Amino acid sequence: MADLEIHRMLTLSTAHIQESTANLFDLNTDDLPIFYEKGTDDGDTYGWFIPIVAGEPFPHTCPTDLLAIRALAESQGCDWIMLDRDGDTTEALPTWEW
Image 1 (cartoon, one colour):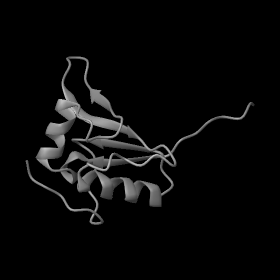
Image 2: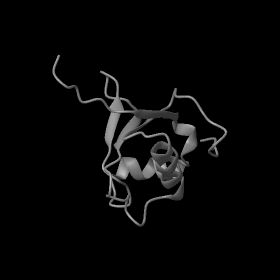
Image 3: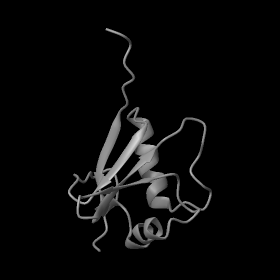
Image 4: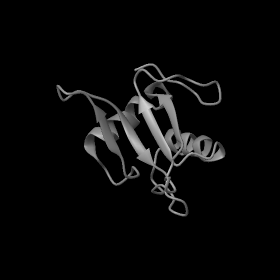
């Protein structure tokens, strides 16, 4: 079999970002890294995929909650983050109700 390209992804609940950060995803601002909406067939968005590109930091204006998530993902050898409304939470990061 040919060499396969395999990526590691950290999946976390959207509870690990503040509502203000979620709103930035809706606005698609330059304050966020590149991201892709995670949605359903009926068009509802329920999370985001965020690639981690080695050597490319998130924007300097990126919210600190996303920076903390990236640091955790990198510490686990991940190169993708998936934020999902039904994802698990971890005690390693704060959570917010919104």
